[in-house]
Image (cartoon, rainbow, N blue to C red; front, top):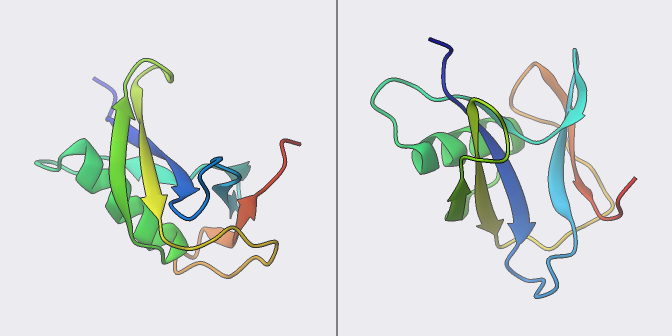
Length: 106
Protein backbone atom coordinates (compact mmCIF):
# COMPACT_ATOMS: atom_id res chain seq x y z
CA UNK A 1 0.00 0.00 0.00
CA UNK A 2 1.49 3.38 -1.01
CA UNK A 3 2.17 5.92 1.71
CA UNK A 4 -0.34 8.73 2.16
CA UNK A 5 0.82 12.20 1.25
CA UNK A 6 -0.47 15.75 1.48
CA UNK A 7 -0.10 18.73 -0.81
CA UNK A 8 -0.54 22.13 0.81
CA UNK A 9 -2.49 24.77 -1.13
CA UNK A 10 -1.48 27.90 0.81
CA UNK A 11 -3.19 31.25 0.37
CA UNK A 12 -3.06 34.52 2.27
CA UNK A 13 -5.75 35.39 4.81
CA UNK A 14 -5.05 39.05 3.98
CA UNK A 15 -6.27 38.67 0.37
CA UNK A 16 -10.03 38.26 0.00
CA UNK A 17 -9.67 37.48 -3.72
CA UNK A 18 -7.26 34.55 -2.99
CA UNK A 19 -4.53 36.19 -5.07
CA UNK A 20 -1.45 33.98 -5.04
CA UNK A 21 -0.37 30.71 -3.49
CA UNK A 22 2.89 29.34 -2.08
CA UNK A 23 5.24 27.24 -4.23
CA UNK A 24 8.56 25.61 -3.34
CA UNK A 25 11.48 24.91 -5.68
CA UNK A 26 12.44 21.28 -5.07
CA UNK A 27 16.03 20.68 -6.19
CA UNK A 28 15.02 17.43 -7.95
CA UNK A 29 11.46 18.08 -9.19
CA UNK A 30 11.24 21.82 -9.83
CA UNK A 31 8.45 24.13 -8.63
CA UNK A 32 5.63 22.41 -6.74
CA UNK A 33 3.22 22.83 -3.85
CA UNK A 34 4.69 22.18 -0.40
CA UNK A 35 3.86 18.73 0.92
CA UNK A 36 5.05 15.29 1.83
CA UNK A 37 4.32 12.02 3.55
CA UNK A 38 1.83 11.68 6.38
CA UNK A 39 3.55 10.26 9.46
CA UNK A 40 2.03 7.34 11.36
CA UNK A 41 -0.72 8.56 13.71
CA UNK A 42 -0.74 12.05 12.17
CA UNK A 43 -3.97 13.69 11.06
CA UNK A 44 -4.00 15.06 7.49
CA UNK A 45 -4.29 18.69 8.61
CA UNK A 46 -1.42 18.18 11.09
CA UNK A 47 0.74 16.72 8.31
CA UNK A 48 -0.05 19.67 6.05
CA UNK A 49 0.80 22.25 8.71
CA UNK A 50 4.03 20.41 9.60
CA UNK A 51 5.12 20.15 5.95
CA UNK A 52 4.27 23.81 5.34
CA UNK A 53 6.42 24.89 8.28
CA UNK A 54 9.33 22.55 7.45
CA UNK A 55 9.48 23.68 3.82
CA UNK A 56 8.52 27.37 4.06
CA UNK A 57 8.88 28.51 7.67
CA UNK A 58 5.24 29.66 7.61
CA UNK A 59 2.53 28.86 10.15
CA UNK A 60 -1.09 28.74 9.12
CA UNK A 61 -4.58 27.39 9.72
CA UNK A 62 -6.02 24.42 7.85
CA UNK A 63 -9.30 25.47 6.23
CA UNK A 64 -10.40 22.55 4.02
CA UNK A 65 -9.41 19.12 2.74
CA UNK A 66 -9.98 17.44 -0.63
CA UNK A 67 -9.01 13.81 -1.18
CA UNK A 68 -10.35 13.63 -4.76
CA UNK A 69 -7.99 15.98 -6.63
CA UNK A 70 -4.78 13.91 -6.54
CA UNK A 71 -4.73 10.12 -6.79
CA UNK A 72 -3.41 8.63 -3.55
CA UNK A 73 -3.02 12.02 -1.92
CA UNK A 74 -4.86 14.78 -0.14
CA UNK A 75 -4.87 18.52 -0.82
CA UNK A 76 -5.18 20.65 2.31
CA UNK A 77 -6.03 24.33 1.95
CA UNK A 78 -4.12 26.42 4.50
CA UNK A 79 -4.33 30.16 5.12
CA UNK A 80 -1.36 32.16 6.40
CA UNK A 81 -1.31 35.73 7.72
CA UNK A 82 1.51 36.82 5.40
CA UNK A 83 0.60 38.92 2.36
CA UNK A 84 1.78 37.75 -1.08
CA UNK A 85 5.14 39.21 -2.08
CA UNK A 86 7.25 38.94 -5.24
CA UNK A 87 10.36 38.33 -3.09
CA UNK A 88 11.32 34.69 -2.50
CA UNK A 89 13.12 33.31 0.57
CA UNK A 90 15.26 30.28 1.51
CA UNK A 91 13.82 27.10 3.02
CA UNK A 92 14.70 25.22 6.21
CA UNK A 93 14.54 22.02 4.12
CA UNK A 94 17.80 21.24 2.29
CA UNK A 95 15.84 19.68 -0.62
CA UNK A 96 14.04 22.99 -1.20
CA UNK A 97 16.12 25.67 -2.93
CA UNK A 98 13.62 28.52 -2.76
CA UNK A 99 10.14 29.43 -1.50
CA UNK A 100 7.87 32.03 -3.02
CA UNK A 101 4.42 33.28 -3.83
CA UNK A 102 3.05 32.39 -7.26
CA UNK A 103 1.03 35.50 -7.97
CA UNK A 104 0.18 34.81 -11.62
CA UNK A 105 -0.70 31.56 -13.35
CA UNK A 106 2.31 30.64 -15.54
